[in-house]
Length: 459
Image 1 (cartoon, rainbow, N blue to C red):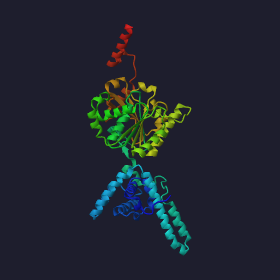
Image 2: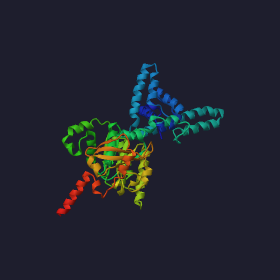
Image 3: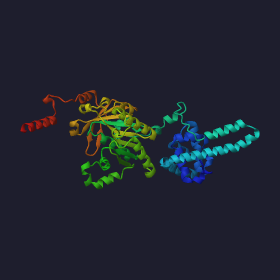
Image 4: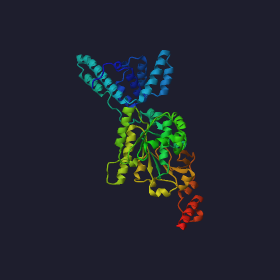
């Protein structure tokens, strides 16, 4: 593929995007490092950045952090260069997630490859006069390898810096400190996060609380709804941000709009009919958002995965396994987390704590997910505004813990206790079964039963 002869012909914006990619995309830097040369750039600031990237990569096998760059810039005596570097780096980081970055990386890779080939041919003239054909062959072969995919995996003894970098697992925090403490800060790229619960138990409110919190922090969220309408999902987010009950929002438009104006990230809500959309549909929509709206999501919410169209396998369990496995694959491919509520089975309706055995459809969901949390809410919990959260699975820390909480499903308010329940509390919740002993039934239950009895007597 033809490229321009000089990098300055691409313009300053292109060069800034190249710097942004080199400072944030390790795979790109890994592939291009052997053909990267500061002489391609004319700006003194750009040359300095490229030379430092090459130096840092040679030693640590990854790109330099913002902190290391800041410290190195402070060591420069030339004030004009320091200012120029600061401005260039600020712009480069802004450009590090633009929608056409993939094209920029490909074009720059081709440019470097052509420059390497040009240099090899020029050097081969001298080698030809000496009859050094092996040298010529080596130069041409090296030039042909420039820009090729060199990511063969984590080199354990070399990539120490990479695996201990804070940005190696860029996380989105949960809205609840409890879960952040258990998961090393939250959920990150490639994670499939599942929230189990019974119908009407508040699991959708839970994942929306995660989406709202992420957006408030500046992350971009795309929310796919296969049950509720786009408008009603939007109102639920309004309720979470404003703290106003959903049924009262229309009387508080001013407060709602003021609350929304403080949200740093963006939320896109897309509605699909149940069993009419597949993960391929969702992936195509994400590409559309990136190309047409320059919207690149940091978090995908699918409410919920079981309602997606699958490959039409004979057994329902196989269909469910396929869609959850594919969702995990999508999270890995895009490098962002996918979050979805999921139904508990019928036996879970009587449980005070939902565990792995209560997963509806297929137990394999538990094996596929990375962070799996359940929410159990019986009738009393719904009356009292409480609920029990149980960590079923956690790849990043402890699991098997249960936490009480306060929940208001009128406005999405959820407050999860910092400390887990002790054994006595857990036994009490887990053994919260229906009883035939009228004296042991709670006040609310006695009232309900008495009302039903009186109604039968009248009939």
